[in-house]
Amino acid sequence: MNYSERIEGLFQEYERQRNSLTEMQARMSALSATALSPRREVSVTVGQNGVLTDIQFPSGAHKRLTTADLTRLILDTYADAKEQVMNQAADLLAPMLPDGLDAHKLVRGQAGTDAFLPKQPRMVTSVREMLTRDRSAE
Image (cartoon, rainbow, N blue to C red; front, side, top):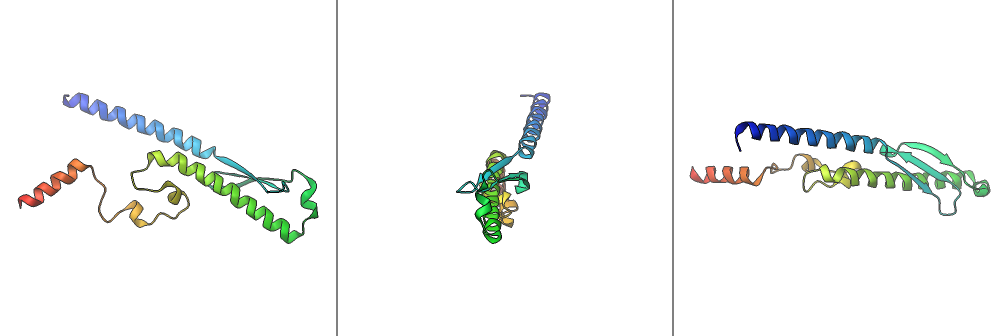
């Protein structure tokens, strides 16, 4: 493969990755999840990043609850919906991440510094072999 073909191939790969990222961003912004409380007193919908977008009371069952119980039920149902949308986001993001980076931890803000900048930098095996070979020649 000559130099021009190699450069053209790199540009094509760049464009493919850029289009893929644009598509993923659109899919991420459209994420939504709805959770329903166990006895159907409340339904909570969240969007991307767990932003509350809707609360419904599909039956009159919530009227029998105390304010404290209803508050707890709404918060628990919200947590369920948020967990669902976080899992959706992680599943979308995972194929684009480097090996070893946990998408579920990343979307929850639980990925440590080593996930982004590990003690040993990530590099292509051929580059690592070249560096090792150069060091052993010294």
